[in-house]
Length: 308
Ligand SMILES: Nc1ncnc2c1ncn2[C@@H]1O[C@H](COP(=O)(O)OP(=O)(O)OP(=O)(O)O)[C@@H](O)[C@H]1O
Image 1 (tube, rainbow, N blue to C red):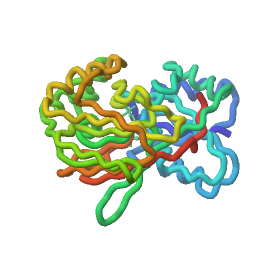
Image 2: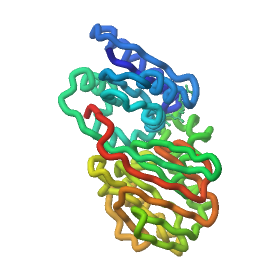
Image 3: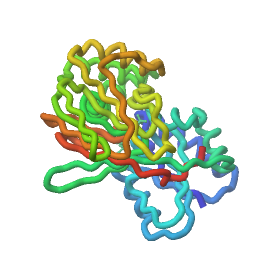
Image 4: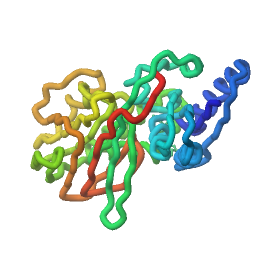
């Protein structure tokens, strides 16, 4: 039995069309499946939780949607028995699919899942935040604080994105929101603590992102060396006095090239504590974790079995 968790609203409604095609293929192939369609944010987490809590048997869950849908599913999983995750990208950014090199065609992706040849044990990250009540949120691709998260927050509630998708230029929304946030962005003082021992202070950080996979924000290769199988986070920190230095860095990232920008620093660690002097936007896989001054992020090694 295959369990599908589908976000019909992903890519501004394209998820619904993609699911129709997948349903036709599934019905024609005669495989046994059950589908759960989300109606609102948070539903994918509830479905994943219901399917896995207390389940000691092997289970295959297939996510149909964007990185946000995978994020919610991962966040809802109870690792009681053996869980295998299949993923059919139907979102706007699809950074996980890009990194795993999954087929762009949803039906081809489905066939790959129904006849799997390769599996990978993937790391995932956990972000911890909150002063009084501490909250945890898992992520599969990346988590960040600062400008990158502000872009994600803005995109989540953007009306322009929906309009641009109607004209098939949805990715332009990321660029426009990115430019707006670039103009608004203010650097912050603070420090990071790597693996509880290495403290690094900074005065002009625009964002700090911790990666399991190299991409973020719909194709920005912020952490080219990130590996999802090394049990570690690759941390990317943009710390510069000159805001204009962000432009060549982001342009190189979008082109998938390595930047020689002096303001960018990379670290590898199992866990990181980030302190910012003022509350800044925080995201996990593009999903909002509100504004925070302090967050902790750690990596769980090779826990999630994924069909690739
Ligand atoms: N039925 C629904 N209606 C409205 N929002 C939904 C629904 N189901 C899920 N969501 C929310 O939609 C958001 C985005 O979903 P998702 O990431 O799958 O698509 P996307 O934003 O198009 O893709 P990407 O994250 O790859 O850019 C998530 O925050 C999720 O909680």
